[in-house]
Amino acid sequence: MSLRTRSALRESRPALDRAVDLGFALLLSVCALRYFAFHALAGTGVVVLVLALGTGLSYVAAAVAAERAAAVGGPLSGQRIGLFLATLLWLPLAVIAPSFGWCAFALIFAMHRVLTPRIALAVSGLIVIAVSLGLWLMSKGQDLGLVLGPFFGGLVLSYAYATVTRTLDEKRAVIAELTETRSQLARSEREAGVLSERNRVASELHDTVVQRTASALLMIETAQHLGEGPAAQSTVSAAGEALRETLVETRRLVHGLADPQTRGATVTSALRAEAEAAGAEFVLSGHETLVAEETVHALQRITREALVNAAKHAGSTATRVTVTFFPESVGVDIADAGPGFDPDAVAQREGVGFGLRAMTWRAQNLGGTLSIESRPGGGTVIAASIPLDRADANNSTSTNTNTNTNTASATDREATGTGTQRAESETPS
Image 1 (cartoon, rainbow, N blue to C red):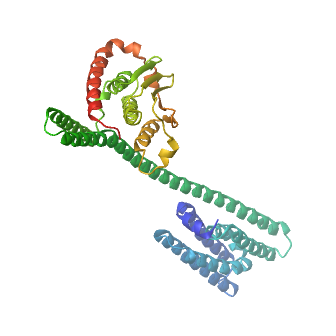
Image 2: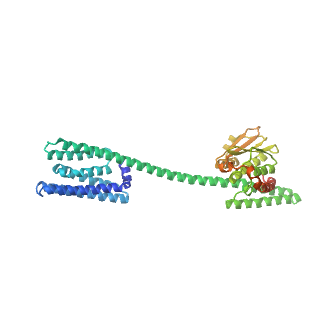
């Protein structure tokens, strides 16, 4: 791991760092008291005192630099210089006065804080050699175990500490990466939410405001050509009604309200009304299941758009709406015997086919799919399928017939009337 990474992760181990610093201060003090308890402050004693004081002051300067770097997020160069100076002063001290060899533990730990593992192991080797040399001189070469024990023990301790430090750093790096990934995921979710809401508003505007405004404009232009007769007056009245409905739809969209035709309506009642309003055949397959209002709303919008497109491009040819209830999903197929088209060619034409994209988005937004089967001269079939919510799938319409008959019938009448009026006033997009 690089020095920059280790510096960035240092603040994650403040307790360990301060424990090492405190340990070195205690060991240095104890070693000095022990040495001068048996040696006079003269000759070699003066050299030992100077080296001990220099080592201690250098280590204090390194600790202060480390605290300052942690507070402001700066580099560890000051701490590194202080520790190197403390080690250089301590090496001859450990050879002259083996009593100070106990400080090796804290120095080894401190070096691993600011150096890469490879360099820290090399410096630890010098520290262990200094301790072993001091003990060898003290024993006059008579006690090999006294020399080799600290030597190999120090190397094992240094390697173990390096391994533990590396493991901690890797875990901290993984945690930091996971935290960043979570932040990126949260940003992606927010962006996806914004895009989803944008698509929803665009689809609603296209299916309501745009279509009805275009219809009203066409009727007004027709009335201008008809002059001032009764037919013109009737057309102007129809255009005014279409504009009023557009205003109502726009207000509902602004306030985030659902389509009134899907409130309390079943898939069958809503789509039958759409089919009857467009003069299309309606077919029901399977046992009807109660589904969420948002699913009814999406399927109704898809069916309406498909029927509008069929009326525009297929003319008066036969059109059929088929609702199918599967165990895990509900689907609707809108088929016509019109001239057909090439779906890939339409998708590639810029500015054309927004209705198809809106239908696809409505299905995919609820976890479903939408497919378009068409070819020139072969008619068109638009098939949408949306998964059923499990809570809804367990409640069939047969268990709720008594409680929903009146609501469904009233909704059928309302949807049929509104749909008929819409069919007379709208023009395909």
